Image (tube, rainbow, N blue to C red; front, side, top):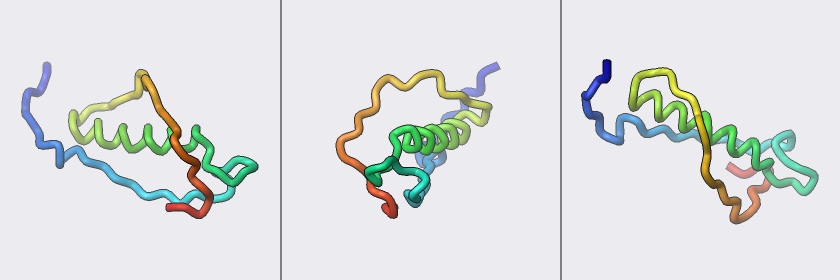
Length: 75
């Protein structure tokens, strides 16, 4: 049975802050793309769960573009 109760976007909003530590970086001192995707996936799961109040999973990610490096010790 589907729950048709609408919720405002603000009730699903999730924001986190992570410090880029040396073990999160490659040999050039830049954040691993996989680590960023991990953090993104966790945040998206929190938001999706808040929205639907059910267990959620990531099925696919269509495109992620890395425009510039993120250096270690960056927030």
